[in-house]
Amino acid sequence: MAYDYEKSIRPGKLPHIWCPGCGHGIVMKGLIRAMDTCELDRAKTSIVSGIGCASRLPGYLDACTLHTAHGRAAAFATGVKLADPEMTVIVCGGDGDGTAIGGNHFIHACRRNIDMTYVVMNNYIYGMTGGQFSPCTPTGAKASTTPYGNPDPIFDISKLAIGAGATFVARTTAAHPREIDKLIVQGIKHKGMAVIEVLDDCPTTYGRRNKFRSVVDMMKELKKNAVPAKAAAKMTAEQLQGKFLTGVLFQDTEKPEYCEMYQEVINKAQGA
Image (cartoon, rainbow, N blue to C red; front, side):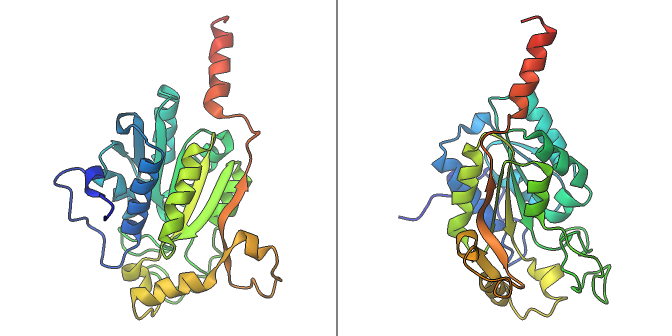
């Protein structure tokens, strides 16, 4: 029996706006499966996003969704979680929204270790707003604003999240759909800031400029370069050249969660 995704979609919202071959739909289906696995009460689940192709995802889902200003998703989500700590808060967005214009908010959400799950769909580009290069565009790759190749070094989102203080960090790709929901489930169940990076190539504004012949070729490239973290531990630096690690990359269950710490401050202020 086929999985019933439509029960989680708001009536009248389909068809979606994503281009043929875009992996955002794969991520959305993974998120739906994860929410069902966790048996989340949709009335107590807030899904927050900013602006961009990836940030359109919450608009399709039947939950308490919040489509906010560009780059401000983590800030709005922090407000939701502090206002109602019992709410399950999930943030969805792209690499441009989350690590460029929203980079400061992303870093400080990780630093605080606030209990939310941030799904970053890293498609290496600003997809919706014109194909400009983002902090995650590979060095040398072409974008509308770097037609001769991007001279900048890239952000490693997962390393950035770990360095900033997130206590659960994982990575997978749109070419590994079965892993997406499993990692999101772990992120939702984790008490603290969880970041799940999904490498999710944009076939239109990135793929065409960078001479990928098809979406299939882009997916094959993701599969070829993905190495499970456990397998990587047995590989040499030469073998890992040009590869990226997938799976759970970091987890800390000892660091205090921010809402609980904030409640302690409130209790002290009230003389409790």
